[in-house]
Length: 131
Image 1 (cartoon, one colour):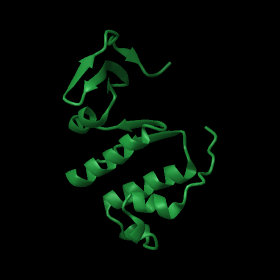
Image 2: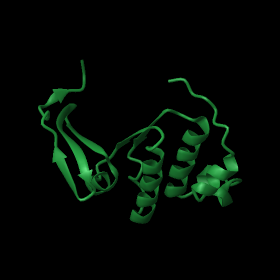
Image 3: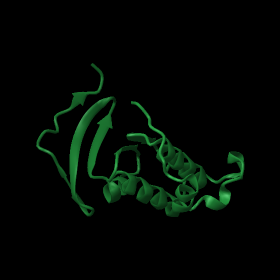
């Protein structure tokens, strides 16, 4: 995908993500949640059309996990956000659609109607992810 630099002000993005005070710190000194928000800031600045977040909350406490998921959910209003996670609670809380994969095959597709329940779609036959 072609990336276009965002005209957004980097300082405003850092403030929005709550990491402006970390602007001049080395990445090695940041917490897991702060590193995740730096990665999200990079996506915003690069103006990517798709964000693929692989276990974005895996190493985070629950407060930071929900913070990162709220940020990703907000970004999903403007671009495609795909989150890979083993945390079904977070998926149910934030996802619009949930695709469960087991051994490289889609085993179910769920459409989240409200954040308290998910409905299995009518087309949930296992299918391979590889050609």
